[in-house]
Image (tube, rainbow, N blue to C red; front, side, top):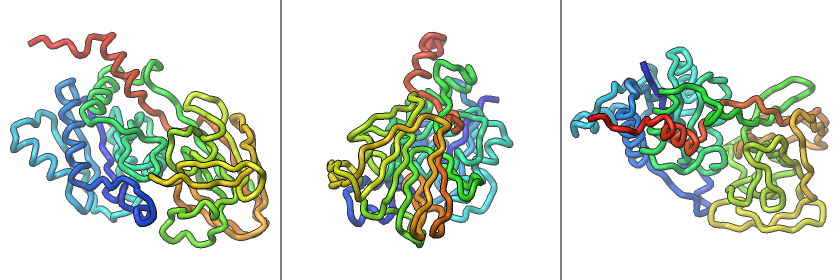
Length: 332
């Protein structure tokens, strides 16, 4: 049976960064509307079953009732049977259940951090990441109907090189052991306490490693992206030290604000090349924009970019593949 799993982070797009920037706020009503359009775009192209992560706002059951009451529901909607905790553990648990069920495609609504949590479960199903968060380099802004159509292509034809890619990650080592990873950026910061997780000031960052960088991105990676570009397909990333060097730039560090940045020239990091540092202070490592790991003074920290991340769907290429297969022909 052709099936998709949907994870919608109810907390994405609402964090503390909205207090000091002009970041877009996406409420849960709009997330529910987006999911409805995803389902409608998918079901007419053969998707038969939809699994949705539960949340405290009861979006899944509300979506099912709305589509059913409107007479538009054809697929079966299942809300996963577990009590939500309201944090990232829900995302991880839902992704693991999707793996057990064997869904064909996972759709993730959130920011970079939400996609990182899904990727950490190493799902065999590819991801379509839809932007509803603050730092949105990994996910993209898509109309829900288009997302549903692309998911239907994956359900119909499986994992094809024409539209499936293996993403890069940044592996983080402490004292020789892998402890976590990031999809887009890993920042060594002088902030000891994880707290609300968000990095509020560029001065908090000492070093930054990115798997992707582009001036069209918002967040940490843009500070390198305004100088050096690394795309999804490039077999390299970059690293740079901050607060020193002679490079002065303006970068979209937070939405709506061009931030003054002082740093050294970015250094290219080929895949599988380890970068080792021994911070002279205590601090924490922020993964995809959120502080996640603490380190002690003189603890050995290693970072390496590898193409070992989750599978993801190139939405446009998937739709083009569907055109070639005449998926959108209507037989009456």
